[in-house]
Image (cartoon, rainbow, N blue to C red):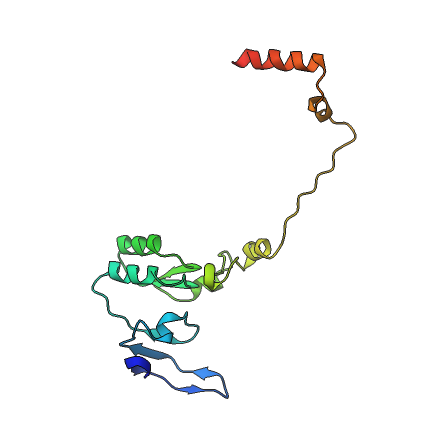
Length: 164
């Protein structure tokens, strides 16, 4: 494997059928392309860290991913990871289900994309809401536009004076 990585499982691919088998790699160099780029495929990188905080610090140096998957039973650990890292979406103890949930937005952050798709989120992301106001025939607003009449000035001064 490239730059000392070890193939633990899988590794089969077929260019003709655009197929990559589920693959697990270990001993990944932080300078390797697969470590540097966001992975869109059935490839899992096994990384060793001395602590969760070391993993968080390492991931904070990388671009924000489209999805972040946390596997833990510790509420404190889940909260720490979620608050420390940004991603387009975060899923705990599962994979991909957040994408199929119709009431959740789906989209990336920074290099992973922008905006959100799915339902109302997608409609708002890919639409441009425009304001439109048509003043009615009868409006009291012209009374508050300059130039002010002496009657209007007096009434404003009296009104403001009551509340100062």
